[in-house]
Structures are given as C-alpha cells and as structure tokens.
Length: 278
Image (cartoon, rainbow, N blue to C red; front, top):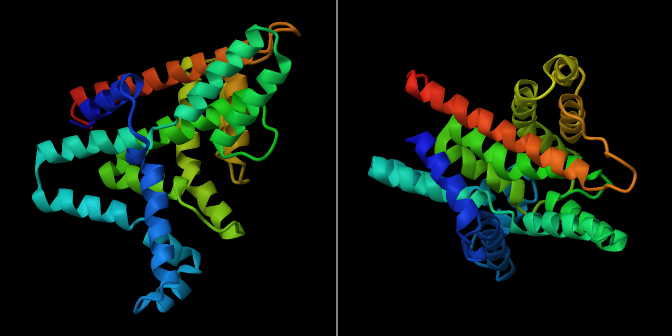
C-alpha cells in the first residue's frame, strides 16, 4: 500500500493543482502565526509557553503539533483505507513546489531566447525556492529542490510512514530563528536523504567515477549536504556546458539525472514489495 500511495501521490502532483491552503508549508506557518497571536493577546499560560518557545526544542515541539495530531487520529481509527488516503494527501501536500517548477521553465525559455537578464532573474527565483542565499550554480539548486520536495519526503515516508513525512516537512518549512543549532539540525535532517539519493546516482550514472566521491561524502569528516549532492552528481554525469553559449544543457542534464534516479528507487521499492521486504 505504501508503494501505491507513493505512485498515486507523484502522479497527482503532476496533474492536479493543489490549493495553496492545503500546502503543508502554509498549514505550518498559519499554525505558528496563530500561536504567536495567542501569545501576544496574553492568554492564560501563554507567557510561559512563549518563554519556552524561545528555545529551539520548544519551538519545534509547538510546530510539529499539527503533524502529531494527524498521526494520532490515523492511529486511533486504525483503518487501512484512512492510512492510505492520509498518506497520499500528506505526500501531495509536502511535495508542492510550484514556484520552483515555474522558475525552471521560465529559466529554460529565457536561456533559449538568449535573454541573459531574464535567465539570471529566474535563477534568483530558483535560489529562493531552494531556500539558498548563496550564489549556487543551477545544477546544485535543482538537485537541492528535488531532494527537499521529492526525494526526502519519499524516503521519510518509506522509513516512518505519515509521521516521518509530516515531521520532515514541518522542520523543512517552519519559521525559525537562525542559529548554529538550527543549521546543525538541518544538516542532520538532510544527511541521510542526501547520501541515499546520491547512492542512486551511482546506479544510474558513472559508477566508477562517482563511487570515490560518494564514499568521501560519508566519511568521518562532515561535508555540506548541498556540496555532496553537487559533487556526486557531477561525477555521475557530465554537467558541464556543451558550449559557451548554451546555458541550458547543465539544467537539462541535471533534471534527466534526477528523473532516472527517482525511477530507479521506485523500481527498487516495487521489487522489495514483491519479495515481501517492504
């Protein structure tokens, strides 16, 4: 049933436009905004809650409450149909990245028309959709967007079900205080999806060239997840521009790589399901 939920969610994500009110990011941010308003109104006990929420752990606990409530209701009814339906909706709500898809298409169109300024603007939009503030190249942005909105939700759903995908998406999308602790949490949160996703690159790309790079990414020395993604992908496939005037080849090759990678893991899940391991 989990494999069927994943396939259905990915199919619907391509064909159905989900209202922004049902995007998980919007739900989490509205929940946090409501909590902030309650604190400002000075309701009973809100002062202590606000003080507790100043700490990272308290902020996270309050942010994940909607996810915990949904998981509790599903567990309470103990219905296979309900679990399947909520699983599909949870995947669909957490995979929404329409802004990135529109920016990618506009980037290709601008680049094909020779509109350098337009391509640069769409690259900034991709950077914003990826949640990056540094000037990362287009292939790293596309890899990071795919990891955060497609692969990581799939992996956490496979490992932990509805609980996993909703908790991951909450920690990905919630409003937070910038701190070293938060950056460390994000590093840990994306460490496993990054290494599993790049392991797939070995299977669908240049295995012998990418293997040493992948092994280095899981070594004792911590490595930035975005950097690990870019390095393994570049080793697994040729992401260099075909010629100086062609700025779309890197983006197209990257998207083709992640599509092959996603298909590889879907097939792997299907095989594991057939032999009873999943």
